[in-house]
Length: 332
Image (tube, rainbow, N blue to C red; front, top):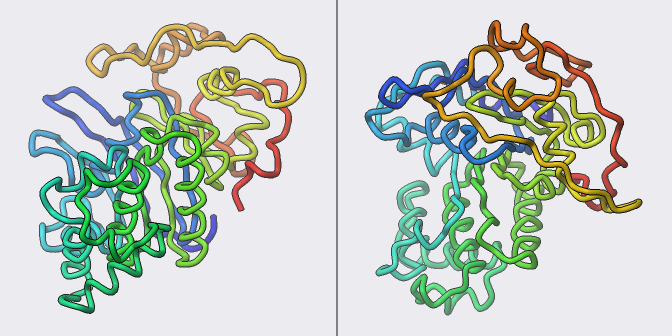
């Protein structure tokens, strides 16, 4: 881990109308660390952080513990959460078009965050907003302050969202699929931007994505989620070289090789089970090529396979190692 624990999540569980969506998620993020959360849609990646930051609707039943620098923030008073959200912890989402207000100019939306979290107003707030837009690579930043979201491209709007997230000088940035709606060229620019900001400010980064290439390029450590639980956790290069959980192995097998002969891609049969129809024991058992009767007895705990590498499987084992990641894909 890059430093002392900044955020510690322990046994986080979420249920909607008594239907479990998260089933005991535990993870930690160090100061300055980059962590990736991967898995198919519906595995609980986004719900984990929405629950941790108190952003789920009132009907959600949330239990467990979320500590920020040792302070419990789960179910904290609204005034406490208002200081945390956007201040110490910022979050950006997949679709900037649905996050920005279409009837307000960009400058107003950035300065609103500056006033809320740093007490800036007037000319000082506008100048700082221009500086933030410059920092995130917005061309002609001063003029863009007076633009509306519909006048900007998708990539430019995502840069605005990153600028708003940085306005509170956060210790942790949670990026929820920040590049999915962008073309590959803009995606690469946004990922480079996040890496540069993290290097310059020392903030920690949680990147939620289903794109393993994005995770490989950006994150030092990876948690693989399936059906509301973490099923494997290790360093990025270790996951790509020797995944241990059958689900992680299936994800790796679905990646096209960059080097060597071409081969058919292997798909994982079936789909993620619905929360109200969870199989007994291991949730991945119906799709698992190594399934045995004992897998149906109880959900397997997350245990160490090797130092720094954990998997939730009663029969963990590395498949034949893939070719090492290219140096340009490894996180700096």
